[in-house]
Length: 428
Picture: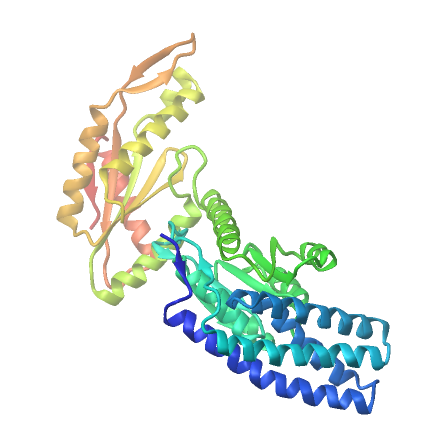
């Protein structure tokens, strides 16, 4: 079922828009008076242009499309004067005066007509999650109403959204929050969206974050420049909530796939060595903080070289891929399984004591020893072979580092292999 802006969020947004519109209209009238005194007052013209720009981009979102179109005409006129460095003449003054008069008239009509047309928000569908949590999105827009409107749309769709209305602080906020996606307004004072995007793309830790620009409808030049400086996509004001959420979801899905490719082993689809070591550091910190338990296991395929030598490397790859599935299926979803290198696997059994871990891994060892691995034969077709594994375990100690824990698990694995293989040994 679709939601609409009739709840508390919707009322707050409309109240914010009308309050800012009333305040802004008075300031816009003062700027227009200054332009009557001096048609070359560029500060007043720029301020008036910004006022019309904000209304043009957001009025339709609260059911006032005519107000948005009227403001867009005034914004285009101000843009032309600024771009060509022209003085404000009588024709332009009349246009701005009519625009402000129309805004006051429309506001009065709206107050008499009751609530504006409801804005439909997108359906709350499945949200792309990161580490089990809704994706974090940051909206950067100097206009509080526009920022809150986008934020409300995203939150209604289930995302963890926040916003920043201070362009000069935006990069600091991005560095601190590390969002999964950024929605960035193009036209902002002091630092525009293009400049901020370039700075984000120059930061090694932020380069992969998708950036969706918010531009004025029909402004092709802004869209092209946004893509040139590193933006991934754009939406036009006034935007359709369903389109915004669809674009956000598409980019987050692509980001999720890229991250999975970066942390997964291509053959086994287990985590890779680099990611496993990162998680090991994180889990040691967590285990120490909460004084819980954890066991690290190292698993090696016995006589794996003979499999490659006898049946070929494709057969060895098939064994490793099937073995990875057996290991993953034998532990909990909260545990961490990685291909550590070659025929060696590593796993973390979270909140698992030594005795429990030994039982789990011995069952895994036994299951593997009884399994028939189907592999491609050199002469064509398939054949089944048996394999065994040796496993070394090391349970976390309060003074452990990643290096000491890995070393003890490695030593236990070596004991298992020297002791005859196809067994589990627990490190001292």
